[in-house]
Image (tube, each protein chain N blue to C red):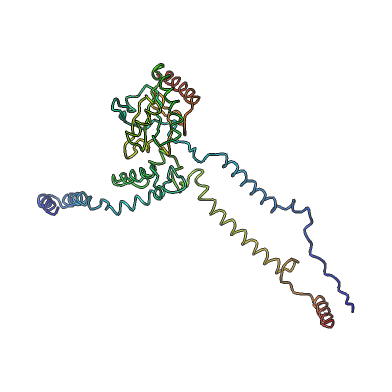
Length: 175
Length: 201
């Protein structure tokens, strides 16, 4: 590689430094492509990630990654070939969506009906949190104002205290 | 020994019927009713019947040789002729049920009527087993075999066999049958296919 780069460099050096830089960049870019190509481990890693997001067409309840069904094996091979061809995760997933529908995705995309499964849990959490917060605030206010008879902690009025003391005394005497 | 204990005024207990006036009661009931409605709708649907996104769209290209080596079929050469594309396998029990029905359709609409083609593609199968099945169940129409990678199966979004696609003369998938086809389905779909093909030509 360095030989061809050197030759290009020498030939062009007296013309324009910018041209040399441009050609050097291009040469470097193309010669480094095989280096950028994914290692078998990296391919396997991506195949695992993608097939984990795809639903096994036969068994339905588990991912393509975890299934040994015929279709899952074929899909894994196909995904591997697509990764090696240089397709992106999104391109590969949308290929399978175009054939099987959104159904094939184990994590529905946040669009249309699929939005519900993403938004609903968050909305429920926020709603429940707000409801609990509101209840706590309300309970605190009522206890403070003393208007809530059901509230657990309420100071006795002197009159009530007297009656309780009297009653207790009676029971003690009976013992 | 008597001590006069005047009872404290009792806390205002909710009256018996007030449950039905409480907004809390009704909101819980509304949520429950919603869930019941959702589940009862869900249980009426068979999770195996997933509508194909391909229906209404152009049929994915395919190219397949007849297993017995006597012919070839591909999407391009079928242009102008509606066809039934049936995916099956020798290991598939339900495919036994529909074998005679497809063969009858082949005789009625292909050999006699010249209206459509019937093409069977065996998937995840071997030539020997597929041919053995065809002989045993008297299939005489075009039978091909998907490649080892399952390219045709995946491009048609199969998730089981049998599945049957009805493709019109313009190469558009008009209907997909999941599970074994019946004579009624074939008769109805072939009538539609020939009608749209005539209208289109």
